[in-house]
Image 1: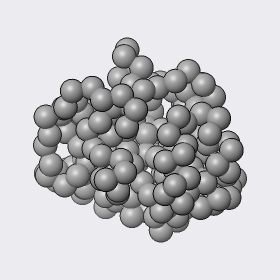
Image 2: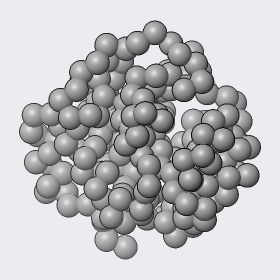
Image 3: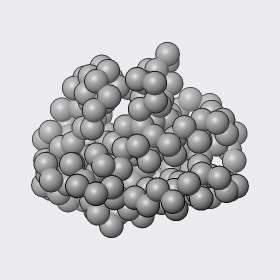
Image 4: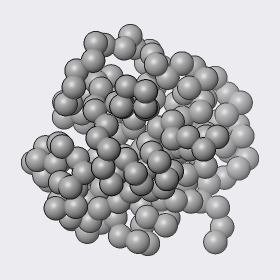
Length: 184
């Protein structure tokens, strides 16, 4: 199966200024086109404090950038953080088993999710988090998303080079990290 991304274009994006945002935008366009998405967020991880921080959101009112979200040791944690694998659900019941904000997800009209980890040196440094209607993230769509994983990892690695503790994927946006607010 051919690569979903253009290595020459990717090399240009990496070499240019604002590489993290450019590569992330490229991944976002590719995933939207090939996998589908109704709401995308992206998170970086602070595993020492068992939390993640949003660095991108397509719905800033529901999922603001910069807020911390606790990490629970559950099936999601085992799959994504410990095993470095994609996590997907096709029903709200499956989502409710692992995400404490499942009612918000349902209220927004979503019942299927896909979390695509950025893995560097055997450690998850971030994830792209996708929401869609019930049943959307089936096995074939998960496999298509998996092909984007190296580019996802590159985008997060570039963000970490900038300083992921204070930067986001929103174009040219630099933020001061707000105080910890659990549960958002």
